[in-house]
Amino acid sequence: MEFLIIGIVLLVVLVVGLAGFLVSRGRRTTRLDDSAPPRRSAAGASTTTLERPSAGNYTDVATAPDTVDIPDTLTVPVEIPEPSAGRMLRLRSRLARSQSSLGRGLLSVLSRQRLTEDDWEEIEATLLGADVGVAATTEIVDRLRTQSRVIGAASAEGLRELLTVELVSALDPDADRELALTSVDGHPAVVLVVGVNGSGKTTTCGKIARVLVGDGRTVLLGAADTFRAAAAEQLTTWGERVGVRTVRGPEGSDPASVAFDAVKQGAEAGVDVVVVDTAGRLHTKAGLMDELGKIKRVLEKRGPVAETLLVLDATTGQNGVVQARVFTEVVDISGIVLTKLDGTAKGGIVIAVQRELGIPVKLIGLGEGPDDLAPFDPVMFTDALLT
Image 1 (tube, helix red, strand yellow):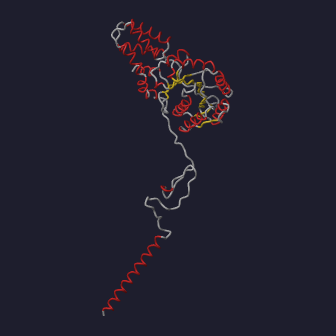
Image 2 (image 1 turned 180 degrees about the vertical axis):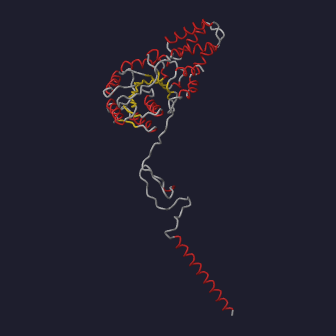
Image 3 (image 1 turned 90 degrees about the horizontal axis):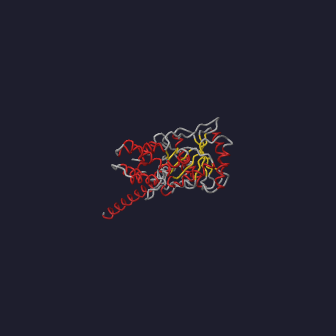
């Protein structure tokens, strides 16, 4: 009887073990079915085979999702710059901070109850130190002294108002500072930008394009600085950011030819303005200055050059006046662009340039931001100067 019971138990164990084996095998078969989801590693990465992306858009398979979307081309998002109107107002506080040493120097003297001869000499020295220039400084101080005598013992606020009037007058508030951008008979307005090395000329061209696009004009850029490949690349990048095309030539090619081609393509495309960048050149190099004259003559074969803007670095002080004088002898400069004005306390260079050359300052650069180029406003500039 005992042997019969033992036999039955062994039979039951054998049947249960066989059933477990069959169930386990059935589960493995289901897992290997094609409809099952892909197995994932401990790191969570799929073992599904991925097609290798094309060069330049390679994605690491170890961290890639099951599906990889590869764009056909990489595009630069187009920015919408702010209009030029109101820029000077926005940048006023920055200008006030950068020029505060000049303003404090003048106002501290004018706040004294009675101005002595030494005080007037201190005012004169402050203006000279701000690069206003000898002739303009002498005229401003003489007129200020005369006005103060007429009104008698003036208050500090009264003297500040007198100084404001004299500085605004020295800046020639009635000068035409508008950019001439009217196209004639399908010929786009051409803006030729010139200057010495390191004045920020190529960057200024890009910022001018932003100003024009912000004001609703269509623009084309001409990279006629063919001596530096980086200049053409830089200008192209500026243009791409606002959806503006750049015409460029091979490195070392004739800059006049590139400029001519840019204007030609601009006319064919029907754009409003063509901004032409030129290579920086020392005003002491006669050969390079002659080449600049050639560029303008070649451009004028297609039509008039609407604006020839000279870019000056405000930190160079009176040397900028010397540079400008030489450039005016080669090409007819119609306006000045003063860059890096936020980086110097010598804002008087604006007065010196206009007085010495009779050329209006039309644009000023007040920072490194893309929209830190603004139309020049004499009244707002003077008010910020004396804040």
